[in-house]
Image 1 (tube, rainbow, N blue to C red):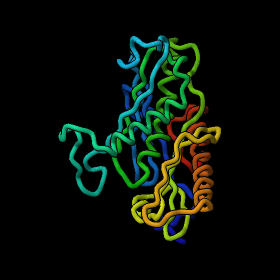
Image 2 (image 1 turned 45 degrees about the horizontal axis):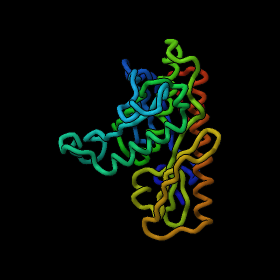
Image 3 (image 1 turned 135 degrees about the vertical axis):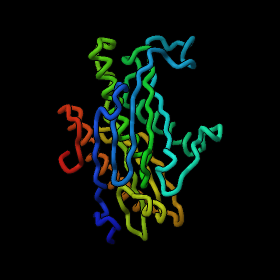
Image 4 (image 1 turned 60 degrees about the vertical axis):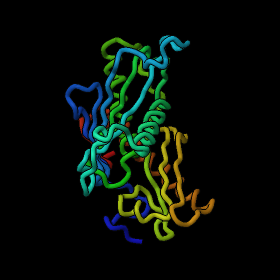
Length: 252
């Protein structure tokens, strides 16, 4: 089956990550996955969140996330959720997913009594915004933790493992990796997978939009996602360990 952008069924979209994208944040990247673009920043706040205070949480930190889509990140302008006075259910779900995914990457005791805020702002959407946000936000989180260590605020990096994510789905009976919007819209099955760099699962969100899927099809989707996430982890490591300002999938 030929995809509209010419990719093979097991091929990721072109991925580019630019580092230090925002001047003032302790960590900031722009990640582009195909036509989806997300700015991910990590900001350090030198205090615990209020729910942790007064509990037996001394010297323990926290990582949390907020997510939003710009009004013209899609083909038609969306209203800012702030003007509506509340967050939509989708937004709440995604930012909770990002937060709990990144907390799996961090030794919160080593982080100390501080909070790292992850902000993921979608400036252009073409499917896979939550998975791109998680993959890019991990690099921003790494950079924020490096900043803390360089400032001697922590003795060692609290990062336990990489975190990356991708989408998979079944379109007209064919399992595919990394769906763009038109593929996601037409998918019989849509799934988002979040994993560690050591190939352990953090979250699997899978839904049969039309036809139920078999165990065999599920295994095929998982195999596709593992392969894709391993490529994204290699991209993350190339950028972080070689201290590069920009990296793309073609040279990861």
